[in-house]
Image (cartoon, rainbow, N blue to C red; front, side, top):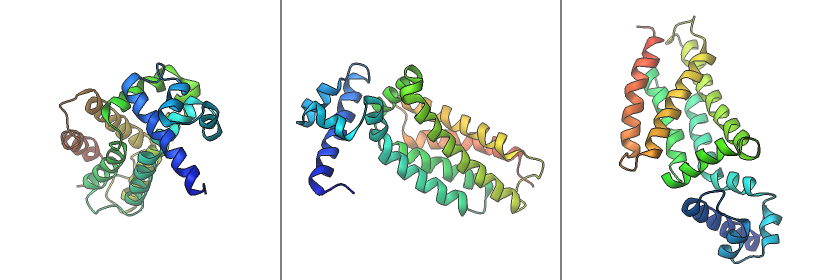
Length: 200
């Protein structure tokens, strides 16, 4: 655990990085600019974060942790209705992600594509953890007798995650779209996708 003074310094660095990444993009933001904005030495930034990709990972961490906790809880104790259960889990993930504004998410998506080794691998590994939560949830629903026994829950989880990722991507690129709009779009798609597997 970091002492209070060090925690505050780390928070300043993360706040400065988040602001500059959002305003100028990942590649146009230097560690020197982040250090200047946070009022620390460049070496201090590297004492806390070994590289710029690691710094971006830490900028994402609070929303990521919130999403992980919420989706894991729903996966282990889902609502009775299968469509509602899957919808709640995915919307919980989106609400955690929504801690960051759309402009920062655009930077994150672009950086994941342009820096696949330095940043993208970590980003996509986390997406796989979210998919695991969906898979756990689908297995729970199948064990309850609510989904068909012949459903491959790993394939179903991947399909649902692709749908959710596309809905979130469309939400991020559209300044006029609200989180509620995205949730409505997601619910409509899930009624169809999950409905194919539900035992009537």
